[in-house]
Image (cartoon, rainbow, N blue to C red; front, side, top):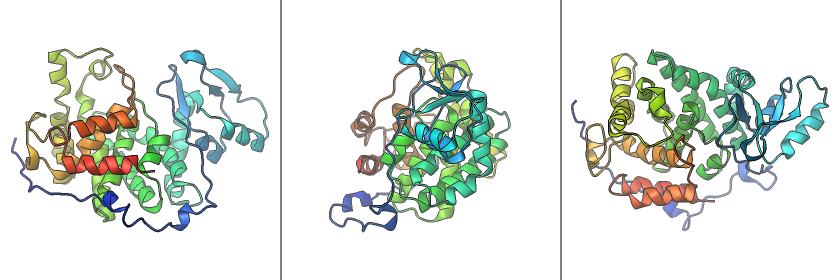
Length: 360
């Protein structure tokens, strides 16, 4: 495998300038803009159930399904409202919006919600009457139907197509909205699903790229697709290893570490991806000190987009629940990135991401 050497780039983080030249307040942040209290999505659900952010149910007005609340201490969900019970629309809206925890629905009903949103995705993203954070919640819910299934198929073309569509709407959302990384983190799901991880990483990558000066919509879309596809090689890793609750053996770890190679080979073979996108897939686990994989590249040998992706990929991995550990807080994840800046991660990328994720 050839090594693609890239000239070293130094980045200035615009966040560093905010204390001196704070941006003017835009109309989207006026005093009359309704502010929704962030709801932390649960990290796990009982088998057969999925969490739904209340905004999805209220915006769609789809009440023809059973609604549940999470049971105490992870126990059996408690029925909130049965699908056969007639309830005034305004009353159920008010009830669901008053909740401080997500509603649970059966997995089959979640699939229906996702497909319904998918059909109207462009309209949702372009509706500026909906707060940006609410639109992100709806886009991530819609991505379940488009991305989760496509990521499991043998033929990568379906996954590429899904990534292009979802990537396009995420670029539109972040360009027309005013959602900060911290706000996105507050409303995003943080579980082990493929669609959860890749949509989070995609949005983080877009926000970091924008802070680093990338503004061209086509370039941002290219970056978004690469981010959504970065873990596509895991489709060739046995699910038992991906979801193993305990520590991997040395041989198992070697298998898992093949996923960048697998993803690159699959996507380079047929999909019409750019070199930059392929390098995001192939190099996102390389480290600037040469201790990464699959090749052991150093510093400027790693493509800048792969170095950017590495930062937000690890941030989301640390803050998401995995079968083998509990999630970290964003503060702990940032401390990890800072501790390994200049060795594992690009120092300038970590500096800028730390600034914007911690900004209020």
